[in-house]
Image (cartoon, rainbow, N blue to C red; front, side):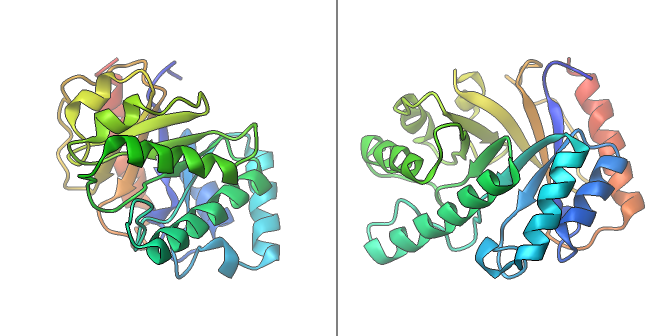
Length: 237
């Protein structure tokens, strides 16, 4: 096990399956932690039965691995100037925060908007800081920031419980050197070439992989992608 770039795998690799079983499969396949999807229609917490949440809590406790809950990204825009859209987005994020607290997740991953933000970075940072009111005092969050003003927004995040995630090909490269960087995310398929990411540091805590397309991947294909990603990672550190 390395001190940095611990491999977290998205449950979206088994889109539509029961999350507790997906987590077990991903850990058996070689993942060192998981990112739990909360995307509708399958996984929005308010639509998930309590028995499923209880089973998820038991799996997280029994496996004792790094667990992140990823807030929905479809139709989300916390930055929206339309208060109805912004408020609905905040409620969706809040559901993920509550789920993370319920199952004892290590942190929450939040993409504030599916589109790059081009407004005032001070205003954007204030909106992200305000999301902390949804969180418990011992909860942590990492924001996936995309677009050219991401560094300016990240610079203004003062709460020590907040970090950032660099999403390859969507976040600006200068985020890789940011003091709040906690993870690097990649979209992956069996055909995706894995190349050096200039500026990537081996002591970055987490390397996070997502499928290029949410679907039910074959378990052998998942294992091959994990083995290939680990080999690539180990060549970097």
